[in-house]
Each structure stands twice: as structure tokens, then as C-alpha cells.
Length: 145
Image (cartoon, rainbow, N blue to C red; front, side, top):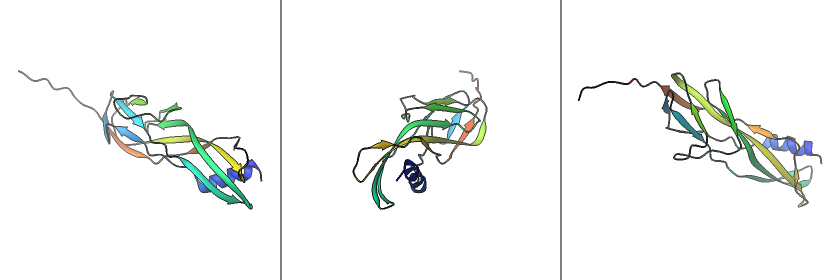
């Protein structure tokens, strides 16, 4: 059994696609910091492959935040909800139904028949599902006291 066999098996099983969480939810304003985060899910599987028992563990090692406006950012952390502002984006133009997502890069470790843990020599990417977001523009209004 080769790491290539393991890689093919992991691709066939699939790694978790993570849902992008956005604050404020579903809509934001131009020039306001919008918070992004996700909640990583543990991935551990035991499979039989070519007559061997193979244990698999995948760990997120990177997050690519696709903002839906043509820009992206990369971090090694999944972000956190408000009041933390670990991962933020400031939209510059209004738009309806922006499709933002988070793509996760995983490092996969494996062991065969309870042997020593090994790491697959390349990382794997799991694209997240799009999250719809409206970007609105607020106009200031002056009032008299």
C-alpha cells in the first residue's frame, strides 16, 4: 500500500466542507467590517483498503475566505464570532446575493494496521458551500431636533 492509495481513498471518502458563518447574518453594510468564521469538524475514519485496516485523521491547516466580491484572504485559524474579530472583510460596493464561502485545507495522517502514523505528502482542499449575503449601502439622514 502506498500513500497514493491512501490519497485516492481519502478523495473518494471526501473531507468535511465547512459552512461559512457571517456576522451580521445574511446582510452587511458597505465599509463596515463583516466577521467571518467557521466551526471545524473532526474527521477520523477507519477503513479497510486492499485488505489492510487504515486509520485516517484529517486536520484543518488553512482557511481561504472567499468573500464573493473577487477578493480572498487566507488564515490558519477558523475565526470566531463577535466580539472577536479574527477574520473580517470590508465590502466596498453594494451587491445583492454575494456568494461567500470558506475553503479548508487539510493535512491527512494515516496508519496501517495500527502501525506508526504517517502524513500524506500533500494537503487536500475541501470547498465550502456558498453562503448568500447582501451588501447594502446606508445613507445618512439629517434631522432637526
